[in-house]
Length: 273
View (tube, rainbow, N blue to C red):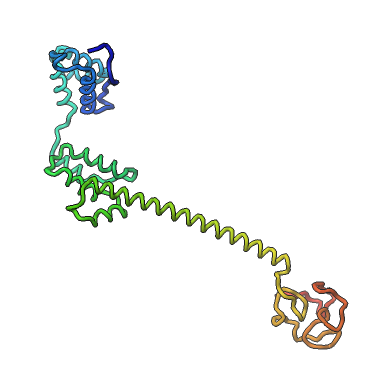
C-alpha cells in the first residue's frame, strides 16, 4: 500500500453517531486503502486505526467492555463483536413490524422520502414479500388527499411501489400546477375588479362634481331630483301666475341664467329631499 490514504475517516462518538453506520464506513475505508485480512492478517493495523478513531468517551466505553483484558490486547474482530453486542439492540420481529405498520407520512416529507423511510423500517421485519408490504404501507400511510385517492383506486396486481411513487408525484405536480394557475387567475381578477372600482369611483366623483350629471328640474331648477318628483309642482309662478313652475324657471321672462339659484325665490326655502 502506498503512503497516501484515500477517503476521509472521521472519529466515532457513540453519543452522536450510529455504530452500525460507522462500522460500514470504516470497512469501506479499509477497502479503499487496501487494508484487509490478507495485508493485515493479525488485524493489528485495523485495530490501531479503529481505536485511534474513537473519541475519549467511546474509547473508555470500549475499554470497559473489554475488561478484564486490556483493549489493545483484544483482537480486532473481537472488538467489533464487543461493540456490536453493546450498540446493536436485540430486535423483536413483531416490534419491528409494529413500527412499520404504524408509520405515516410526515407533512414535510416527499413521496420518494416517505418510500425510502419505509424501506429502512423493513430491515428487521422479516417480510416474505418486502415489495408488497412496502407498496401497501406506502399507500395506506400517505397523507389524505387526491394522491392517495388515486392510488387506492388502482388495481393491486398492476401497482408496484415504484409505480405508486411515480403516480403520486405526478398527481402532486398536477395539483400544484393547477393551484398556481388558479392563484394567478384570482390575482388577475382581483386586480381587474380593483381597476373597475377605481374607475367607478372616479366616474362618480366626476358626476358629483358636475352636479350629479342629472337633468335640471323644469319646476324649480335644481338637479338633485326629476321634474316628476318636485314638491313645488303644484305652486304657481309669481310672475306668470301659471301652476307648474317657479319664478326662476318661468319661460316668459329671462332675467336669470341657467343653474343660478335665486335666494329670493318663491318660498325662500332651499330644496332638500
